[in-house]
Image 1 (cartoon, one colour):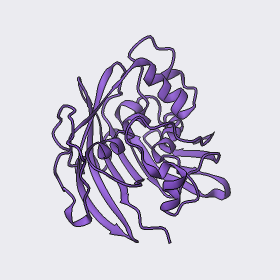
Image 2 (cartoon, rainbow, N blue to C red):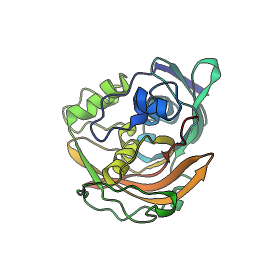
Image 3 (tube, rainbow, N blue to C red):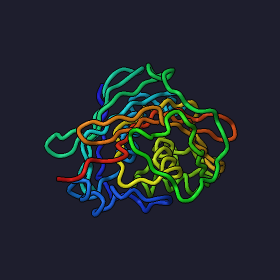
Image 4 (cartoon, rainbow, N blue to C red):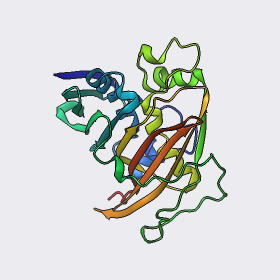
Length: 270
């Protein structure tokens, strides 16, 4: 069976942390793009509705997903998500006009095939970083060194706004809750980028892949903490890539583990 959904991509909401210049016109132009990029994690957020339609609501708590971002998504483009497969695992793709594939991937129930490969740090409380924040090159990347964890207190109202305002969708699972509203998987996936900018100084960065193992569905009115370490850096076609293994927790324990792939220094335009 195939499940399909469409949304019109909107500009990213204002950043609550250190802004990524790739999401405004000037920074995107410097990296050689036609306009401000819509955050890849929001593409994933819009795809979640279709994944849940295919795999059922328990996927939010104990399922996994592996998505790769292949092309930029711009505000105003109509994004079509298609998910097909069985009740156990599915393939997915997100396309815009002319069948340009923006994101592709897979999702399923239980433990992901790669879940045991993640090298996440020990859980630790959120902490403050020293100013000024450092930067690094390919040959000086601080591999396998735990980053200073980043915390965010998510109120009930914030959890609902993440869905209604950030994603612009109507999903009763995340609304009309008096307290302890479920937190959308988009927010959990999106904790990795702020964590890196909590620890280091970057110019424009580009999200290229997320591998996420859900352990438990997050709830509001508690602090969500993300920690990670850089496990690999490499160069490809002039871009500098890094891979981080992360862990997201609240006071009750682990919510998700994540392998986050990003270009931390794009090649210069031209």
